[in-house]
Amino acid sequence: MSGLADPGPERRQQEFLDACEPWLRALPADRRDLAISALLDLWVLSDELPATVAGWSGPWRYVWPRDAAFSAIALARIGRPDLAWSQLLFLQSAQAVDGSFAARVDPSSGMAPDDRESQFDSLGLVLWAISDVNAVSAATAGSFDLGALDDLLRRTTRRLLDLTALGHRLPPVGPDYWEVGESQVSLGLAGPTLVGMNSLTALTKADPELWGRLGGDPEAVRRAADDYRATFTRTFEANGMQRYPTSGGCDSAIAYLPAAGLVPNAADGIYALEPELLGEVWNRLEQPAGGIKPGHGWIIDRSSWTPSTSLMGLGFARLGQVEKAESILDWLSAHRTSAGSLPEKISAEGAPVSVAPLSWTAANVIITLDELYVHRGGAGS
Image (cartoon, rainbow, N blue to C red; front, top):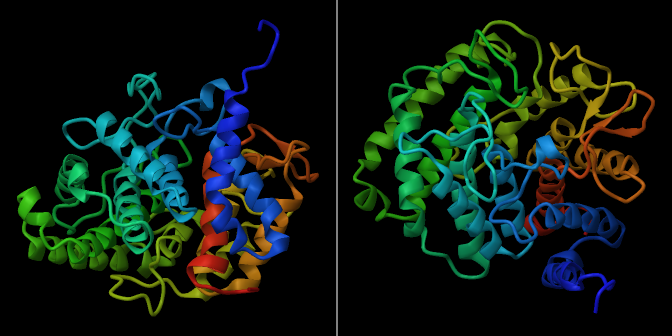
């Protein structure tokens, strides 16, 4: 009948939440409200789309490969590996033949809406997503066919290794999550590249047939990962893990490393970030309303940015800094919009501003909750 609202979205939303119920029940009762907010944010930005868009406002209604990688991991963690694999298959279809990704693509066509420069961080983060989703799927619902992503793996690996000279140099200069032009390679690119190298070694162990299918040499991949670790160590680590190899001050991109499991005592990890360093970066970047800005050189405003804040929260969770991770979740929960969504920014006065919901923040919150209470079986349970 005319005038009646379409029941489809409401039904699909409830079906999504019903499928998440086992995961929600594993959380402490006082965390479920925040979890549902993050789940609904992720759902509304994914519903009937091949991959999650960054936000719903016009300029954000595109798929950023970086953000989609986090969304894929979050979807796998909540028990929806089918949706996670769909995200990765979309990225495979949108990837250029040279292995690059457009900075953002239209979810309907897979085409870039403009000529923004490709962002190299997407390579390492997509490899991490493939590795994490594959591991979670194998441990819970039975592994999906990793071979379905062979084209994505082959192209991404080739570009990552070629443009780092098999790990002997840093990635090329280009924009990162700050979305600005650069004259030096940033931690926002170099860190995810280290994450990608680590993920390649993990995938090599998880699928012994991988390189036979891709036409590569697993020993060469391991050597490249070791060589890139050395390259990263003598540049960024040797100079205090700043935004640029020898300057720039603190940057929240440091949190990519622990967020992806590059932590002490991680099984077979190629690098480990010490917890104290992440705490120091947080203290230097903290803003008036709580939360943090993206980096020392970020002088646009005094707002707190929830993608950076929530990424740090995930980093603290994986480093075992439970109290700090939980305090960040508390802060994010307290600064939701009136509709319950997680916004992009919080003003210096403590008000939600800019776009909401934001898929990257929602995904970070979900993965953090999973690390604290489900994946580790732990804190506060």
